[in-house]
Image 1 (cartoon, rainbow, N blue to C red):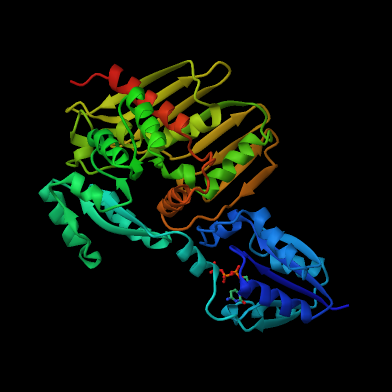
Image 2 (image 1 turned 120 degrees about the vertical axis):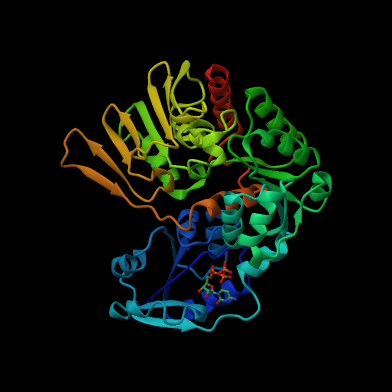
Length: 449
Ligand code: CTP
């Protein structure tokens, strides 16, 4: 019996897929089809898959060509499968010619002619209209967003808004190649031309920009902090839901596949009950920067607090009993370094953020059976360990991470706009509101000299 194996995403199942499976089956007597998981697709840079895995498997099954369907979830699996199932022929479409020649050591490799003029990518393009996005604010992060947006399919950045002429002229110089029109006067006019906005302006302006955008029915991805009070944050999420618009707080680690995997491990019970979470985020900012000199709206906490608080809220929940802060301020009264202590009924947490003080940017989750440690920079989660009392046992994880993380956030935003992932738990409205609650508490209790 000749066994054949082929792999694919098989998203929005189309004629090209059908014809490939038909010919793959004809190459032998028994066909095994590997269907990719969403997570595996993300790690290989395919962020925009629409159909959930069960639907993609069902579609492959309905062709009647597959004798066995397996799930492909990691790199290197093909070699394992070929040996495990005693495969004679490996086959894929001609778009992959040469890419799998290394498998010739194990079996015959056949590339089948690809069916012209059809692909999942083309279908995705026609299923959803392109989302026209405008960036509010033209600082460094706007520039990075612009660069990364090339990897988010279905999203076109069509303009920026900033009434601050100085920032606009710097942005124009740096981003000249994008030839992006910048509106400097009329926010309403700017909003009228877009479907969605990414808000990357100074912190104190977030709330009003978000509110105006949502009121106009636009989807919003907003940099942290979303707002300065819990009430404002609640109001914005309520407005989003009444306008059927997407509102997402841009705490990018929450959307990274590696961090998701870390959460799964933590929640699996492997390390027992969770009793402590420690998260640190520090990045030295230039001494003369706005972040270091603006005592009211700058400082380490307002800049980075969301990053360090997010894993705590995700792991220990929204219902903490108390929160206290301790800061080292500079002579202008801006916090250079802040420690946040959070007490839960049966657990505790510490977040540390630094803007003029550098520390190890790690995340440690301590449980009753062991702990998880994600080394610096944990927020670009590329590796983490599970360790136990017996120090000879270390489970090491190395999730893939592509780019600087913004593309994961963008692809989540796009998925939500398309109505996929409405039930996504990566960062819920409730968690984002809880983080704003801590921001409110910090602002209320801090001393500005
Ligand atoms: N395939 C094909 N003819 C097409 C499209 C795909 O023969 N017109 C083959 C691919 O070469 C692969 C299999 O179908 O062997 C599964 O491909 P997949 O990547 O899932 O489909 P695409 O339509 O190529 O998806 P995308 O556009 O997302 O890359």
